[in-house]
Image 1 (cartoon, rainbow, N blue to C red):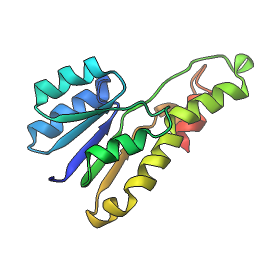
Image 2: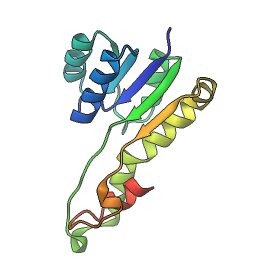
Image 3: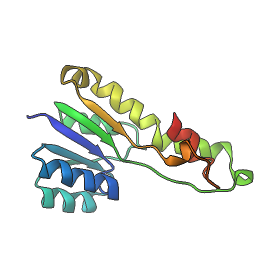
Image 4: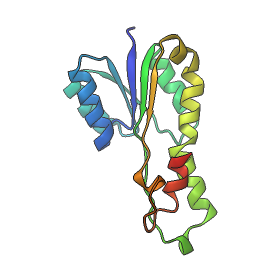
Length: 147
């Protein structure tokens, strides 16, 4: 297999746009998303492979590793934005956001770390402007994306 760029969250607007840009630049890509119908449409359009995996499920990274063995780069385009006034935010809200926006990234990097080092690969993570500048109702996502 040739080196691939893994795009987690490939069915979202950022992930699908990045996939198209990389493919149009001649790169080999592998899409990862939780919705098989949506990722299948994008993979057919871009003529690339994909893995159906939900980053919130145990063993998601093993599914990806079974399909891809040589990684050139990783883009984590999965995300959420849970907007609430601070007085309505709970510990559970923060934990839910960390479970989607941070913990899976750690698992991905751990699983592919040797390969990433060998290929001098890049990992791209997306943050939010709310990390540097406060916005109303962004008290959940700001600390998570700043991590």
